[in-house]
Image 1: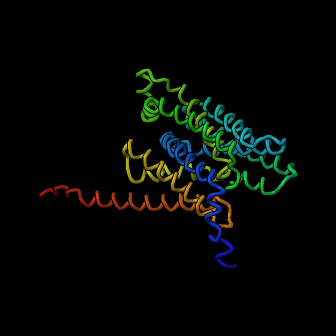
Image 2: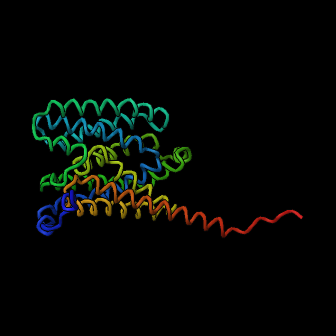
Image 3: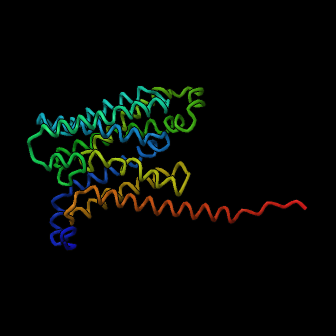
Length: 289
């Protein structure tokens, strides 16, 4: 086995021109995922992301079996999960238990539908790990349209959603519809997951919706810079992973997840170093006597 079995950039220019839709889709997903991921982390919904991706995978697998566009099935599965999880309200204990029950159910349904599917094996594998060649012009238009809806909703709901996330009790006392915002955000999360499944796969959506925001929160607590850095990290992971995958012979997901993990690791080290310097800079407390 040689490096050319893993990476081969001999026809890189032609591949970039051929798969420009995937690069654009990666940038769009990075923008949306980076912003949504901030609230995923702040609302402690990492587990919900995984649960939503499992039901999205089940919907996409059923669509594949029925010969329907997998995006439609993925959206239906994600929205079903979002409505179920959002209806649970803000009780984390109840939410986690329900998600834990639905996750294996969704994954089991997806595996069942894929086992009944008699088409190309690459289509089955792509639902789990993503397909770099899966973004055609109609798919890009659909992804862009859904992304615009999610971004507009976030722009309108950002301040009340942030208030309800940081301090739900005071937000409710101030008239913020805290309970109504929970299912609305879960619907936005479900749409984002549905868009991501076809590109990076159902099993690795966390690399887009959790890792970039988690990395950003390691280096800053600013409510301005956390979403900015989260978007930068998410776009870098998505576009960088796609650009590497164009010259590689592996699925797209290992490249994206590796870049995302390296960014998180660097941010974690930076945050730890800043914390140590902060403690070292503190004046020593006076000793008695």
